[in-house]
Length: 191
Image 1 (cartoon, rainbow, N blue to C red):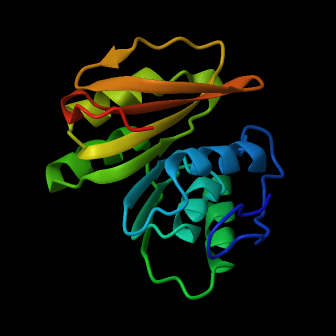
Image 2 (image 1 turned 180 degrees about the vertical axis):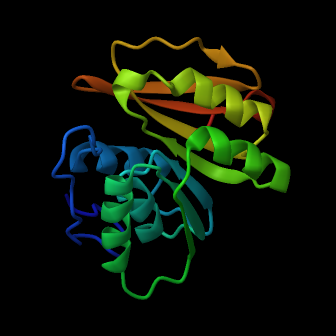
């Protein structure tokens, strides 16, 4: 596993050596960040179910101003911290939350925290995508022009709208797809 672009391009990351963690492949990560744009200068990123931290680290590499990584599994947290220690000259704010996603999202909501980019890659077997989207909407965690990216099994169908959020794009990569969501009130179809 390597960082595919930006400041840390080519940096090798430690991947999982245990069952249950399915990191986003380099190819899909590169495609995702090419879709998002060459730079994420100054954006606030939330990486849910962060695992090894590859998505959040990719965002850091491409200029994110702040990255919050949420992972509750101790094995994933160990990998995440190991990978973050490999980074040099980090100028962005990096926060690791060893917490359950469903407990931390309401906390962010109470604090009034907003994110420009929210990355969601839960374990496929848990089928948590809809529940996470509902909580993100309920607590208004997405900035007005922000984007949400779900990594989801290509066999899973979500409704096109969930509360205040709507899907604007879907791209397929083998057995998985990337879904892009934003606020309904945004009015602009940003991909």
